[in-house]
Length: 230
Image 1 (cartoon, rainbow, N blue to C red):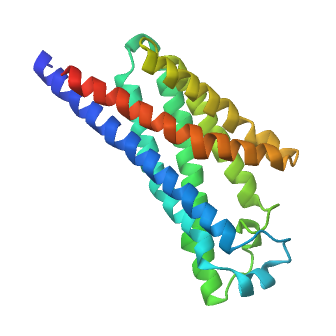
Image 2 (cartoon, rainbow, N blue to C red):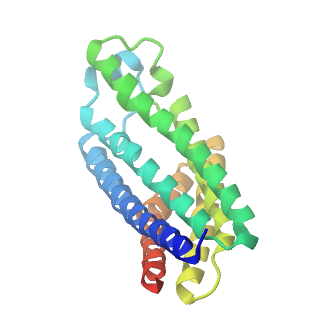
């Protein structure tokens, strides 16, 4: 491949990296806003069984998962762009991070689709038998366990990918934000296993609401700088 072809490929990858990072930041922020609105409109209450839930559920409770389905491809594209951008000697870390990120995407995507594409239609039809373990309204459901585990997989992905960023101040900020988000999300496995709700809420606010959107914006700025270099 010629030098010009390599330059065009790198420029294209940088464009995809920029737009996917910005899209992830925007969509994750939209998800957080939707979740906040849902929390006010559908206050948390003690689980009383699927029959009661089927009579009292609100469609707005499924909006965050619908938005979440859109965040997943944006995140995966961002991780792929980072892997392609990474220097050859550090690609082992970006590849490992991409693999864990893909596992996160597959698991969380399936879980969110079950919410929006299976559970919600079943509730509308009144045919919800056997789905109580997939209802997020049930705080001890399999759905919550899988959700925590999926985000922990993303945590591993971010922690591994952190070590591909080196150089200027912007990249150092991205590195340590990846480490922070990574360790925070990995802790969710323990938060769920030992029922430490305060840890889950802390990670949700610090990582999902604050640090991850900021991290994605900084990654977008990094790729914007790469575009300008060409």
